[in-house]
Image 1 (cartoon, helix red, strand yellow):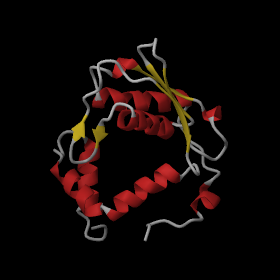
Image 2 (cartoon, one colour):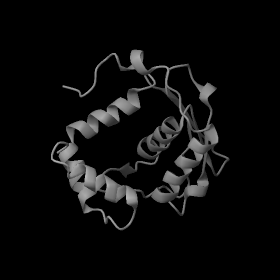
Image 3 (tube, rainbow, N blue to C red):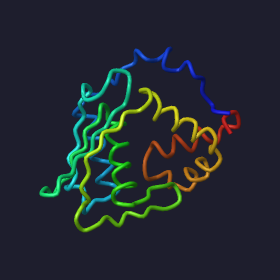
Image 4 (cartoon, rainbow, N blue to C red):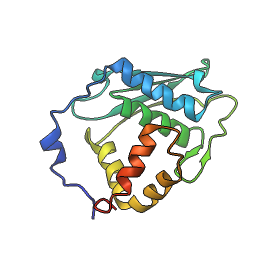
Length: 167
């Protein structure tokens, strides 16, 4: 049984990101730099809220044969990150997970021209929430392995997750 209700879009559909399109795009670029630092320059990320239909997440991945860079445009930072993951998984045959990553990108990045639109704007968020809800103990175990001296966010997360009311 999922941890959410079907009426979520109806109740929170009015919410909009506080961050600008540029800030959201830069956050995705940061993710790419952390995942594939030596190849991050091969990806151009933009966020354009008008790229897809209202109330839905959309991304477009475009890599032409005569170009060296992949352009990913999303209606939000989340949609752009989703597009990057989609390209890695289905075009480069890479894998990113909690347990291990396989990020051996082909020397020449594959051609792609795909646009994907979610069933609703909250689909990717709800799926993530549902995943973390159903796999809470595994997520907690991984966060407990992090060094709390590395970042205040890790320390705060570890403190929150040690609360008996949450666990």
